[in-house]
Every structure is written in C-alpha cells, then in structure tokens.
Length: 140
Image (spheres, rainbow, N blue to C red):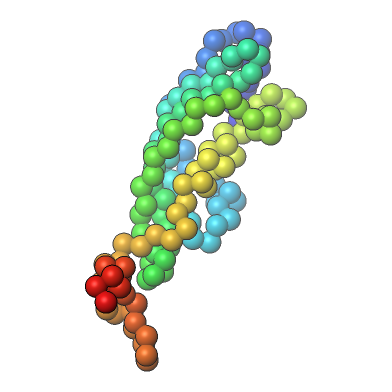
C-alpha cells in the first residue's frame, strides 16, 4: 500500500493520519525464523517539517516465530515507536511511501535472535549431553 506524500508537499493537508491494521505480505518475510506477521496495529501521523517528511508511529502486533529450542511455532508480541524524519530511500520518484516496506524494515529490528518459551529443558538430552538453563549452570 502506498501513501501519497504529494498532499504534504503541496500543502493540501497538514498531516496524514495512520490508523489501520496491516498484514505483512509473505514476500517481505525472508527470515526463516518468522512465519507470519498479521494484524499489526499502526497508529500515527506523517507531517512535513522544514520541507522534510516527519513520521511518528506506534506499532503493536504479534510475530509467529519458530521456537529456538523446540522449533514449534510460538507467538511473540512486540511493540515499537518510530519518531524520525523519513529517509529518502522509502520514497520513490512519485513521492509515495511504500508503507509495507517501511513497516517491515522497522519490524525486522524487533525480531529476536533466539526466542523460546521452553522451561523444561530435561527432555532435550542425548548420549553424553543435555541442555540446561543458565540457572542450573550457575548452581553447578
């Protein structure tokens, strides 16, 4: 979805409000650990300050990730605020903002390197090895 920024450049409007729910298309999800990103709540506004586009938004949603230990799909809630001038690489020559690309680039920073909901590590063991928590490690 594209947002027309010409409305701000031509002073037709003072701000563009964002209040919607988005689903990030599968083509944006290239990280193998992220299965889906749906129902991302976006609230905010886009304004023009000193001939530059300024964006202030709040994002809330849930990522479906693969558990780092069990590899099962788990929900990972996230929330972030973005409050800055819009970089040129988000605008194309028609002065439109690709909101999906913008959202994805900011959400990808929230993807944890390793996330698990596992608390019982005793079932993860083999011949001569076992997985232990940091608590158990510190006890030993």
